[in-house]
Image 1: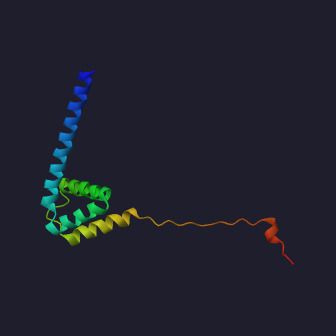
Image 2 (image 1 turned 135 degrees about the vertical axis):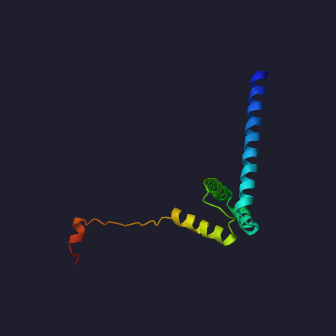
Image 3 (image 1 turned 90 degrees about the vertical axis):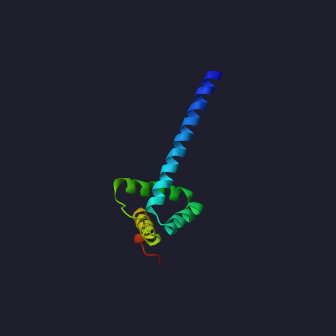
Length: 110
């Protein structure tokens, strides 16, 4: 039983170390591709919507690794990217009602 617990503890430590390492790499990439103002904007988003900020950070890191981002993004450029991403996700919902005519609707009430 103790050996099993020891193995699980080691696995948890390894997973935690990997998460910390990935977080450091992400921070390093974001520091390279974002101006201080853009980093502050992203930090503000993280305070309000942490899940959204995480998705944005991952997307920015992927773009940087793919070479789609070659120079630092300013705050205005980050805002434009965020607005474009929001525009893609929002889909207009349209509800239409089809009314069926019943036989009582055809008759005139006098």
